[in-house]
Length: 343
Image 1 (cartoon, rainbow, N blue to C red):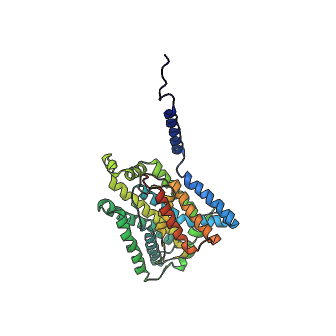
Image 2: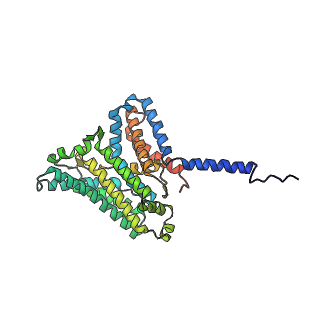
Image 3: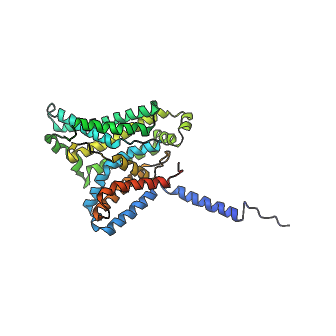
């Protein structure tokens, strides 16, 4: 008698298992950020078809320069969201940092002869103040056991209220003697590429290296995946959370010091809706809203993608420019819908 064939060697079950396994392996082999990159390419092609000026070098550099501020903040926001947190205050934080930095430089200018030294002092102060604000968030969340949403919702109002108080409801303007020294930080270029874009690239590279190649980055992802398991694995969860919010605060400070020379002033409208744009960039880039999964590459692509969409809307007048924020809101809701249950 011939032995009967077994399902382990032949039959539809084995074929289905092989097929599904191959599909699973194919999905896992795709690098993170592939989906957002394909979306960016398609949107860019659409922009060229709708308006040939979209591909002009000046327009491309303008888009990248405007992306730099949100992109730098989004890099820090990526760490926070991957860890399972959120920060709604980054726009208000940037406004207050900008106002305090200008006040410091205006105060120091008469006492320090070198304008370059005054500007350097202001730039260092911006990053340090951002880190201090991030430290406050981290302590309230990690040690105070308050939900990140509540903490940053509260500071969102606090930061902008203090800027409004310091500016007396108007604008805080940088001393004209310092503007000429400071302006190249935004308007200058290196090898034809604007300075803010170079800073954005550097921050993104460092962020990717830290998130993917260091123990700290692995701890951030572990906390976002399952905080209790991370605690059982002897991860210092509170310390990692505090560092993560400080990192985001420092990124806000870097973005702000690049933004200040653009207008040379800070007002209650500075940084308005930056938190929406930063969060949108992170989740459009593929980072899971529930934490535990995400990457800097996707975040960078997400930030550029949102800027490109806004630029196309401005060039083509498909809809009113006043609805750009609404488009970003719809994007956030749509991505969140498709991320349901993802972890």
